[in-house]
Amino acid sequence: MLATTRTARQIVKARTHNQRQTTKALRNGAPLTAKASLIQRGLDTATAARFASAFSKTAGAGVGTVNELKLRHSKSTGRLVVLTVPAKTFTAEQITAALLTYRPKTNKAAAELFARLALAA
Image 1: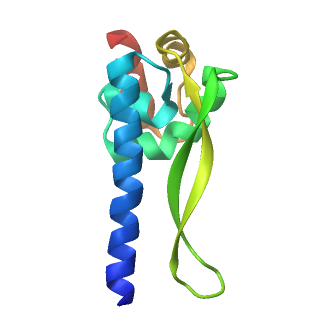
Image 2: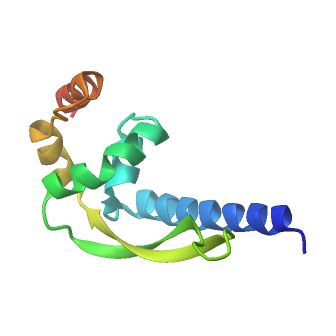
């Protein structure tokens, strides 16, 4: 099997798994991960991925965990590896409360963006 084919297959597998899991949670009204919640409220994917870890610390303890698939390169072989990583989930109320308090300190544009999200919430 070609390395590029294997890599492409793994990327599609991880994206499909995470997208199905998020869609199912949205449909059922179940708690979402911090990244999925930020995307749902209007942030672009890159910004949501960048600030999700810090934002999830502000959001509190979390309701539960779900398994997400992450893609990483192996240190020894350099090949792309799919890892199953637990991610905390949060209710809509927790996300709204965190939006009201969270402001990134180093990025002024992101701080303004989160302030606008808090006003919309």
